[in-house]
Length: 352
Image (cartoon, rainbow, N blue to C red):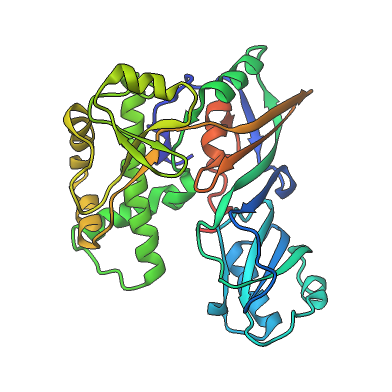
């Protein structure tokens, strides 16, 4: 993993187990779930595609050609890992046109395995139109001790740090480096996709730094005065009484949140605000980029609780299944499970 991730604290201690994740694409399976039911009518043709070893944007561009439209007429709800088997939805803007026949599209694209479902809808897919993703991960060459089952149970019950994964930061963390350079006016960024990557990397890096610092201070499960709790509907609540907040955190319906830094003041108060402010102020060049682009402040849960988690250990293979909310990273879960022998061999497995 890149240095951007290596310095971050572990919630359950650095893992002793090792293994190889993504030895082949079939070892990493992800299936997304939309946050709406298709209307059954409308200008937008929705298609659920199973792809193997192809990135989202390539498949979208090829789908546009097959449907006789421009690339901008095809959209998706979330980027997916390239070196994986993924089942994801695309939407194609086809007003007044019949549903296309995609038989030849599948036959002529090796990475497109199957068309799983189609539907019509009255709106295009937009990033984030997901409830979440279901993962099935096969770790080969796995070497662990008898404590692995207890560790996995702790991960299931106590959660993991809700870190942004290494793919958010580019190869060797280059998106963060570029964001810092941009913040020092070393160059101008005119390309919209690069601007998006650098801004996302800057905000994600600062969130990870705050989260890591809270783990080191054993403040990941412990609220501070002035913290903001967040629920799954992204409602926020100010912590004015620590004991009451601790009770609210017991069932995981409310969680302590961390900053997705914006150009406005941190919305936390008191000791929580001072804690966060000291960390984000340590990166003035990233802050310059965020503030210069008028990014809106948001909040993100500090902890991630894998749902419907199960595992099976046979010989030197460990298979883990779980579901995560949209915007969360399976690699954040696996970082607490084991050290990946594949890390550093290739950073080109991701769409970004």
